[in-house]
Length: 182
Image (cartoon, rainbow, N blue to C red; front, top):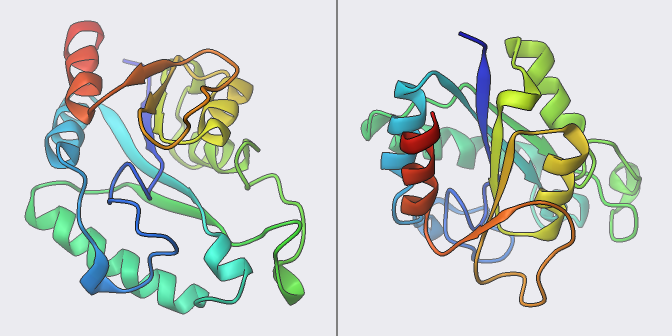
């Protein structure tokens, strides 16, 4: 069996969007994320979070703050029998970054850096992998990297996005797609 990944944007997909999330007391997991991840892992998908973190770039919180929050989230996921294989993040922003964080970087979606890193580090075939996101930049990254399928969760992007993707109202729809198509 080819190695493949379920790439997940974090804010709006794994946890509810609260705007520059960096405190554990603000974490609320999106309905269906635990079941989706367990199903995907059972089908042989690696579970990889890929997230732009403009809050670091803007100086709202530090990389250490992000790492602490992600350790908390990983512990909470583990309690639900979900083990993330990796969490990749981009702390850079070309316009709003401060100091060393003010730069364009291929990791920043719609760049493909984080997806390609997952492919390298885990031997993942991008053409057999999928991504779930809530922004056009997620769709753009998935399309540019040649992923099998991109899903866009309804609600964040009101005008739609260019590119190829399936729009869904819930993570349960993504889970059904996985169960039907493997």
